[in-house]
Length: 78
Image (cartoon, rainbow, N blue to C red; front, side):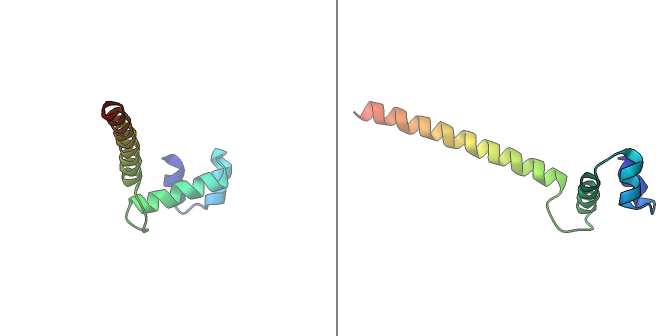
């Protein structure tokens, strides 16, 4: 991302945000996430966030399927 490259080139986040018409908080978040992705800061990387979101989505799907099976089982038991 061009904005992060400018910040890495010793420009201030405030100056880059003004230059590119980004919100200051958005650019700060992008720089922070880039630091995390580079291993310079502890937290979940972008890839880990995506994997976690996918896993949570799959868990919700499986829980829904399990509930359907439980309801079907109750119908057959009655």
